[in-house]
Image (tube, rainbow, N blue to C red; front, top):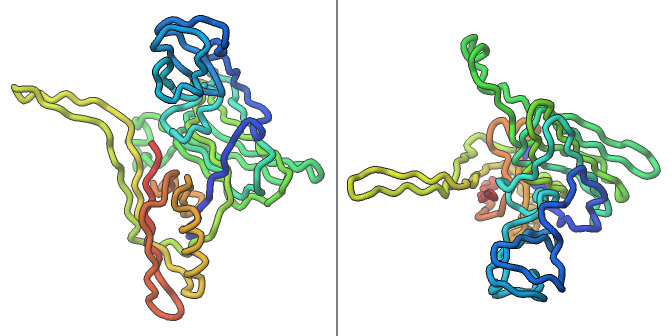
Length: 303
């Protein structure tokens, strides 16, 4: 199983050509309107709440947050805000569709996180060659079905991640993501388009867990109050790499040390639990001999 790293491309207005979600969370901010405390507006695809009455204060320019606080991205733009738990929500029974183009480089991997739905489809279309890639991934999670009892009684579960990789690199392609959920509200936390790199052969010994930001406090009698908060994946990868490729891999990791990346180990690695969208934390390459070296790579996931 090949370990792969995909560097996420930034997504802006020039890239989002269509979304089935309307952007009508709140009224758009207006320079001439006098706003009162608790009024909410949209501006530059972000949602703001007024904390000091007045008019003419641009929410985006209020750097001291004296008049406005940021509530988060609008529903349409949540898949690009880098927060997996802040999900865009559609309508039950209606496919949620995003169409993107004008990327800075040809895309070879598309990853989606924080999913709620039945299946997700990626269609890549070139203006000259037509459809050059089309794949549908079922989100039905069968990993909990381990015997006859769980087959009959285990609650229905869905996979929250999907990775499409080895996409033909067409410079002018349009990438359409369609998420269906016939009986429930479809949700998407993040859509990540990027260029993937081969990081070597994934080895057993990779470890994964979470960093939990929930809190647990006890009162004077010892009663515990738990507040559930988001968590982030933490994965320590091990991979075998040709020693002669050590410099190439080191440069890739150095160049992308402060950028969002997706690291995965194959089409079923999300089932195993080692697909992660986050930041490169620590890495090292141990040159065991002139032929093979070992890569150790730690990734801290987004919440």
